[in-house]
Amino acid sequence: MDVKILNFETVLHPPTWCEIDLKALAYNFEQLQKVGAKNMSHSLGIMPVIKADAYGHGMFQVAEALSKSGCKYLGVSNVNEGVTLRAGGFKQKILLFESTLPAEARDIIEYKLTPTVCSLEMAHALDHLAHQAGIQIPVHIKIDTGMGRLGVNEDQAADFVQRMREGCAHLILEGVYTHFPVADSDRDFTLGQMRRFRDIVYTLENQFITFSLVHAGNSMGLGDYKSDLFNLARPGIMLYGIYPLEDLKKKVHLKPVMSTKARIIFVQTIARGRGISYGHTFKAKEDMTVAVLSIGYSNGYLRSLSNKAFVLISGVRCPVVGRVTMDQTIVDITAVTLSGRIPKIGEEAVIMGTQKGSSISVDEIAHWADTISYEILCSLGNRLPRVYHS
Image (tube, rainbow, N blue to C red; front, side, top):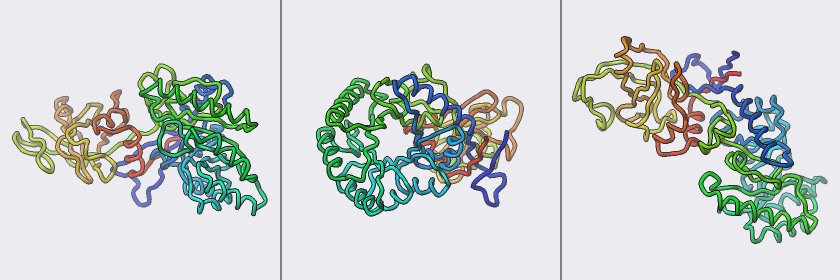
């Protein structure tokens, strides 16, 4: 297997790192395309979401792997991410999900990015610059059908689009979309969103306003909702091998893309009654052997995992004991020593991933930390060196 070590300057063997499996990424992309073809009657494919440095997986490397797999669309959050991709040589259509500021209109046009528009102020800024350049530029309009974040209110959507058509001759109304905030928890509400969004699109079609791209499905929307209206989907978390809902495992098989590892930097015996780490929130009930790992909350391993999480050493689940500190975490390796061996300094511990047939998933870590898998991936991926397997 070809391994590329990136983001390291002088450290060839980092004490803590993430491994990114680009073959798993390509596999997931292929599987999600199949789901899109099944759940959308007129599917034009999927638009992988690679914002936030591809959920901590590395935006450049992920975009490159997706390009090799034939990806035609990429979704990012803002202008900076879009410009970064263009500077890296990526030619795909790049949609900006964030409703941008009028001051960013010039960069959008210069770098051929596709903006989301949900204010007339932004529409007019783009139209003015496009007029000066003698060009027309494609835009997508976001309609708020229940997210309560960005987007034109659904009650005002038809009027808003009509005013854009009449007042912005240099804008191409290429796409229209909405977003599902509770697709994993409230099916009735989500189906209601789909019906109301469909009504808006049909109303606009009756006014001879049509869009070549109509989309709404995030990972959950793509995986669990069928529609003959949508022709594009925007999977994020599922691209990286994580399921927003356990039931989706029955519908599509995915592979985790990220794993995280740390080295043992110290081993010692703790006598019965002694406290461990700050605040002595853990005290040994009997003599025990512990290992100190080179990972802490400065590396994205959350302090809320203290006394809750497990790691893998020699394929054995070893509990985190005491508080996670800035740079180190202490784990109880007594169960390993009972098998007749004492782990050595420098040995790998698996924080997230698989070792000798045992696994710790990002969902488990998120449960222990009382958060969501998205935060765990971003926290670890964006703070640790990454090793890419392709």
